[in-house]
Length: 284
View (cartoon, one colour):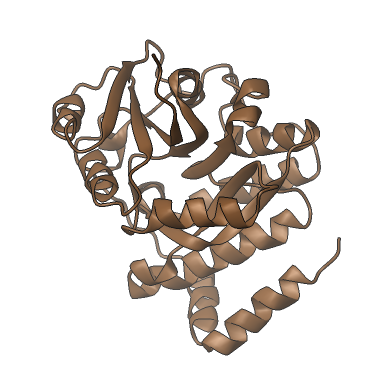
């Protein structure tokens, strides 16, 4: 007999022996225990699975092997075997406060019409130079929600009803997370950005590929998405590059972006809250 749980957490992995144990350790400390974890691994070549198995006695844990190294394929495989009323897709390099799942449960009960959600990032968890970037990211989510809702792939939650009607598009190279939200809305489901609880995710992609390069890529992608146009650079195979690809960071001097970050960091909390309030009142 299948025992249902309230939350299923699906984590696609490939060579994440460094980051995955940190996330699993956070999950082991959660104040809310009615959840299961499904790690969908794309045949890692490091100790990802061995280190994952050490948490088998900490919570309900299932490891699924994916024959394709494709983040959408892996998410869909996890969702197919999930038993939860809610499925939360996380990245292996996410970090959570110990009240995170309790906070999610509270929000879902407080807002019973939510079908799909994402969460703000916890800016205070980042180093000084990165904090303004995260605050701008949170504000960016709010701005886009007024045009065409988006959700970062690092954390997307969906009800069982959504999962039964919608899947991640396995042909998309970029924007599969935004596409999932968009298609869910088209199907009549509601989407919400939760400002609490917040989570942390690694900026290793920015550090590895270069901040400006990543910003340009995502800005172009999000603009195309907002305009309802095909996202450039798509191909039929969205490969999981794996955690080891980000082991060797590169550096890049971004003078103009640094100026934006510095100016934003000088705003007081009251000024930042006012900016967010103004964005929330925009009717586009």
